[in-house]
Image (cartoon, rainbow, N blue to C red):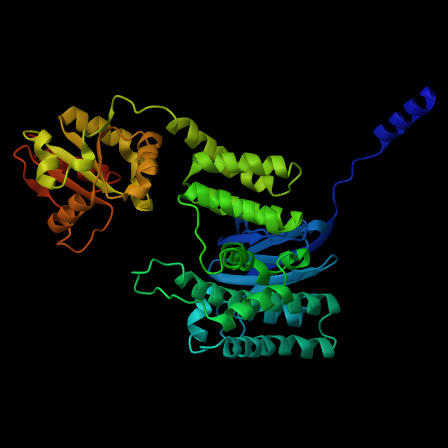
Length: 496
């Protein structure tokens, strides 16, 4: 027995480790474009997961994509502003040529199912949420169903002709049937979800509707029976999720809520409570494979927003415990590393240089705010947690801080965030190490600031302001921190 074991071990060592073989290839050729940017998304175990996107650049107008067997299926490619959609099967060697100077046919595809591939790529498949206006005159469920069904028949007809003429194979035809079934189901579900959402608004909201139309409720129920969410095959299509988990999302956050509440659904208050409820609803109502997919998609989307990191780290830990072998985890990990870095920075106390203005919640006017700064020059940054440009400018805070200190200039940060974002506001101060005085303006102060700096027409961010030692606003729209030399010269004029 021992000799047999050593023989087996010896033979195992001699056996070469064979990597998963290339199952299909895609050749991209772009005329007159040597180094354009591109992004492509390959399936994860044949399933469309948008978190698997990869970015790269063309080399002399060329790019080759190799697919393993588990990566065959729906492939989405974006080259500059051009979108290419393909259905790739094992053994396919597809050649995609792009010539923007050819107005009649800028994209040509050669290889298996080439006629169908070209139509699929050129077909207008708008995000379903953007099609609501197309069907706004369909005031009954019967009209809506008929209208959307007619649109689907038009799109399917061309593929059926190609199939009858044996220009596309059965696998391609089956894919397009399932794809367009779920795409148009997503359109209907999005429209009905919108009608249901109006019944959940507060009674004083101008768009509030007291009754959810019964015929649309019946169609909703029919839709999810005819095209079930718990269909793993549908996860392999563009139509099921459209990049936004739309169909299943409306099922979880709309249809199930309606079933539960009989039009009186109450969502748990707060973002974290709402997310917890969503995950619980997914686990209770979806099959394990679909639930895993949905949860991973939600986590990827939310982590990409770069918000609510502390809670998302906890939700992600729970996800990994529920699905320890999940193929989606590797796509979440880079985002989680960033989230953990964030969390480690913000969990501590403010530093001595990160100063919240005492009693800031009770400061109702700009004049009241500036009293402690009388006799000092002040550089003000107006910002908000949702302002991406504001946060981009924080990369230049270290140099700005050194300059302001050298000139004896106070640094004041004014956030126009609402109370709802109080925690996030404080976390961002720590994360970006914003040294200076801080205030989150209340509604009265925001109104006063709007009157002074934006002529009472709301506000536009970011905005940078210089206050002289005499207390006058001397620069209503100063240079940005990234414009270092210009900004520093601008400030120096008032501190000589």
